[in-house]
Image (cartoon, rainbow, N blue to C red):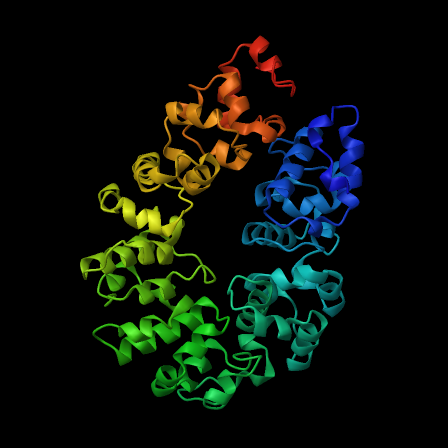
Amino acid sequence: LIYQYSTSKLNDSNCKGFFKLAGKGNLTALNKGSIKRRRLLDNAIHCLGLNGKGVNKEDLDILNNLACDLNGTIIEKSDSYIVELLKNCELTSDQAASINKILKSGNTTYGAPSTWNIVTLKALGNLSLYLETAIWSSINKVGYHISFFLDILSTYRIANLIVQDSDPMSRAPQFLFSFIISEKQHMRFKGKTGSSCTVGNITRKIILENTFPVKYNADQFDKCLDNDVVIANLGDLAQKALSDNYLQIIKDKLDQIYPGGVLEDQLKLLKSIARKYNVTEISKWNITAVETIASLMDPKDSTWEDIKASAIITRYLQLGGKLDAVALKAIGGQYLCTLNDSQINNITSSSLMNTNTLNVSNCSQSKKDILYNKSKEAFANKRNDTIAYYNLIKGYLGGALAADLKTLSKNNISMDIDTFTKLNPTEILKLSVEDIKGILGTNLPDLKERENDPAVRAWINSQQQSALDTLGIGLTG
């Protein structure tokens, strides 16, 4: 229930007490990355006066579970006690990188990694799942072998995670491959260095095993994986949580098999393997079907670099593809933003209409402007139903002019604060206090909680204090 309390009612005299209680709560009740959860941490940081600074032991005791959402920069600047708090957290790659830096420094109660043993690793709890190869390599592993590895797998139930999670950035794959790579010279099942496969040819049965490719270091993975097995099992290999060097091996084998470029049917199966191709190679792909675009840009797979995403879509267009509704849905707003203004200008309003809505809030301002104008045209027949119209153009409002925002303010839309902060800052400055009140409606109190957002702060500073006071939410210009 404490997470339902409006933090706008807090002040300097009672905020620490509130956040100490909130820090002891079950933070998983709020989805990681959700507006409420981000807002909770932002307000806690403001209450404690951190503002980008590291957190001392006293303040970490207040934050407790809220520390799970601190970014890597703050983590690195904080007291080493933060390591204990983060044991209970699901870490992002940014947070994990910072924890590894702290642990590698040796300036924690665990000491230098070279002194660690099995007892230390178990004491680290979930953090052992995030250890980088460099740390595993520095641990004295005399006597470590497959039984230790499987004991850790069992302890954290990673075997089950491997089956369910194909994201190569997840905890299980990170642990698996950081450990495996470091064990090249130590694990008993490595086999002697040689010019041939020494641990057994990789077959379909082996590929489908939960722990594959545990017993294959990169050298043996390369030598024991025949090209014909790659072709016959490409889809299954692509579903596995493989580290970069293993993905590169598969990619190299595909280059041998298809010197002229991977066939389109095979492109649809590549998933994370596709990320190993460079822009020049992508520009030669045969991408003619929208199904290929949908497979390559499946949001469940790892994120594409913008330049590669743009190359994929551009190649599709070069080969006669159209940015119709089906293609736009497959591409999604995130990757649509990687195209240039000219390409986006070629999207028809009818295509946008049949796509319903895309979130293009991360596009450049010029692209937002183009897409907003097309969305106005696409959904013009819905203008008499204000709420329906608003929900359809909501994802494109980053390109809206102040005049259009003023019109919306008269129609009780209650815009959420995240959408508001992604509006064009220049146009926000043209809005009056009454306009803002009408736009945000029941969400007006959230403006106070986001008052330090650059766009919000600029607007507040542009207003007379007497006008701000009429909002009744405590804004100070």
